[in-house]
Image (cartoon, rainbow, N blue to C red; front, side):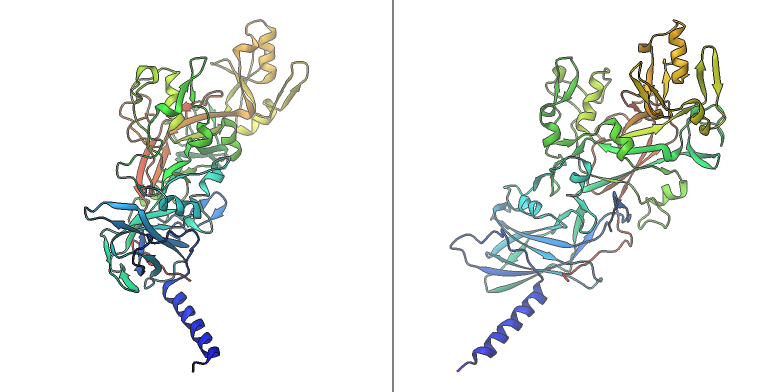
Length: 519
């Protein structure tokens, strides 16, 4: 007779051994093998490597390691006799763990059926993202991020504690033979994972004045006397606009994202202006107001040739640029079928049409605080400032209940040619030479710019990045934008910026593969 108590302990230790060998699994919602099919448990052993440069940057305030693996979802997809993948017959397991050493592997224990299989892998995926990959006929993993703004959306793809969402697949199919427990060993050829997101960094040419770093507004010497004023580097903010909510988690073969086309997402309003189609912001993209760029954007870094060039090294040299903002992949068609009877968006667009690419293409918005050197402060009185600090005297905060106008310190007014304090503007209006409607207020001195992140400068006469077929944001790329000099800012609508751009692969810091196992 068997000892019942001893049998229980044997079963318990066998259970622990199984956990040690094959890792922890998330069985919730795991697709079962087809009814009536032979049941096989495939024990898949695999290693992965992350392509792309580790930058140790932050998801806003949350520190993250950009090569970190906290979980791996392993998918087995059946393949028919013609080599076609059958995503109606897919099983998966999620294994949790973190990077340990170069000798570690992930092991997943997956109930499936005998036959030829393709192996797909996702890392650091949310449960909804795992199910999105598993539950779609083509296996693209269409996923729509919800949330009110950039921070909520991006944290569904890049999370400080769990890492960045990544996907990949084995280069060759595997065969699961009939049996009870079948070993599938893929460790000899690590599976390459790509981050679903890209990263964008803005750097600016600077000079030093009054103990601080200022961005250039001309191509002159170290202290540009010809500049019309000052923009301190710390008074520049940038943020991503038109951030994609809807992505394919698995990279599509044609390189097109779910909202690649333009026509469904842009319409003409009653005023003849092109605007986002109804519900686009909620369903497709995250848009920003100009004011949010100053309030929520991050400061660019000063341009350093050594760091700029070091970033393209593989592995990167010490002192390379590592910062930036994350964004999901976003590709955009360069023409429309219906808008204005069909538009080539890479061609010359009128002022109304120029907004169309920015409604569907991820780009940078930049806010900058400008202090003019010469300010008209009264009738016939022009004050020349010797430093930005003088603005506190000549551009104070104003409260004018009679005129129902209240302005923050640093606010200046311009008629398109000269800069005025509030008192100077009122004096000009009182003299009858100008009307209030002739002036535009730059509240707090803040003006705005925009630039596409990638694109062509060859067709641009002013050095700006024109919209082109290259303006799409591709996954696992590091985009570095260098602003050599600023033009005068715009208050109402952002104006294009002159920029040079470099795209670099996001390669591993060590140049080696990363192999991980569950803890």
